Image (cartoon, rainbow, N blue to C red; front, side, top):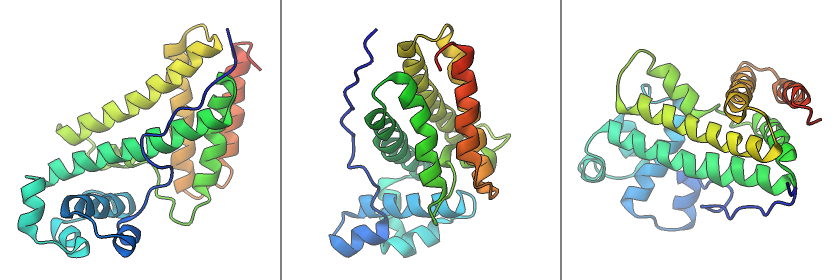
Length: 213
C-alpha cells in the first residue's frame, strides 16, 4: 500500500470569513449575510439562545427577507450546519489533516495537532454539531438528524484513513477515534489546555494496538 498522498482541494477557501469581516470587505447578498450571521451567532451562543430578531438585526435585513430564504428557524439552522460541514469538517479539518500528513497514520494524528491550534484560539466555541445535539437532547427533529449525519460523515472520513492505514476493523476503529476527538473537544471547552495532546496520546495507543506505531 502506497503511503504517498495528494492533499485534496478544499471545497471553500481555508479560513472562514465571519459576517462582520465579509460585510466590511464586500457587499454580500442578503441570503449569504443572513447565513454567515447565523453561523457566527449559533456557534458563539447556541441555537436556542439566538433568536430570529437578533439574527436579522445583526445581518441588517428585514425579517420578511429572512423568511423568504429560510421558511423557518429550523431551515436556517440546517443551512448553517451544511455551511459548518463545508467550512469546518471538509474545508479545514479534512483538508489540513491530509495536507500535513503524507501517510494515513500521520493524517489521523494531525487531527489532534489541528485541535491544539483550534483550542488555543480566543474564539474557540467547540463543535457546533456536538453543541447542537446537547441543546436538542431528547428532541426528535431535523436538526438532531442533521447533526447525527454530519458527525457520521466525519467518522466515515476517519474510517477511510483507517482503511488506508491497514486497520483490522476500520468501522470500530473510527468509532473509538471519534470518541477521543469528541472528548478532547469537550474537555477543551472546560478549560483543559492539554486535551489535544492527551487526545493525541490516546490516539497513539489505538494505533499501537493495531501495530501501526
